[in-house]
Amino acid sequence: QAQLVESGGGLVQAGDSLRLSCAASGRIFSTYAVGWFRQAPRLEREFVSAISRSGNTTYYADSVKGRFTISRDNAKNVVWLHMNNLKPEDTAVYYCAVDRKELRTYFSRSIMSRPETYADWGQGTQVTVSS
Image (cartoon, rainbow, N blue to C red):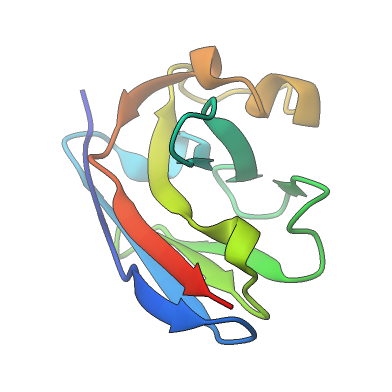
């Protein structure tokens, strides 16, 4: 089981940037894909982005494509979500999660965008964007 700790959230204005971090321990981090999800009040948890274990393949929700960038450093056991040009509709609690399948060989957006693909979740970090 992986332990995940998100950080980097905060209160910003529209157009600002933030970098979220997801620090992992408890597993061989480099053998698992990682995803970011978010959940706004009264809404379902939604997919934001995912990155393969090597970092060579990434996926994004249409709503964040071109503004958010996911990256990872396996030596440091960290995944980042760089968020630029933030909008009020980006306001949510952001969660990182680790794939339940080690050394996944088939990596697709449809699979990685499903919450049930992931086994371990962090506690989340709040991002609030004011207009």
